[in-house]
Image (cartoon, rainbow, N blue to C red; front, top):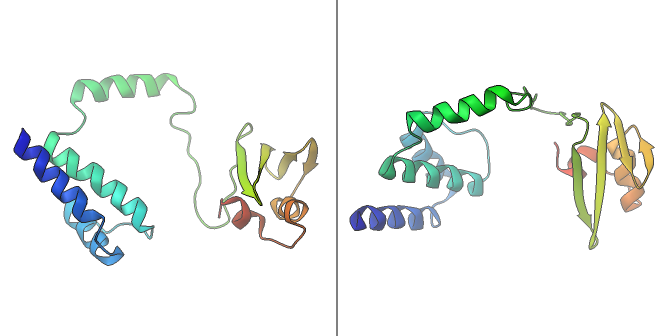
Length: 146
């Protein structure tokens, strides 16, 4: 077991020195398909998980059955969330948070194009970003949902 731990630690340490293209190649080697266009940090996290999974084993069948059973009773566990360009989460109760000039700003999503900030309702994230910053901003970009 000590040899496995050393091998894992060695491979995880190597990830920290790899460039994005090297991480992408390693990802393809370990997963069998090319990664999506993502950051090196996210690639390192996925690779670290996969390396440990290979050496130590993945989730067992009985544990997976428990997880699927729990997910089957949770209406939000299998929620299909659209992703892609221009997507803004619209699930009521979702909060967007952004720190701007040392102040955290919280926006509550009430529904599609319905946002509450400091007790005021807005229909546009871009308008909200302008209220917060005093400048014109792409609201999706400002709140990190683009």
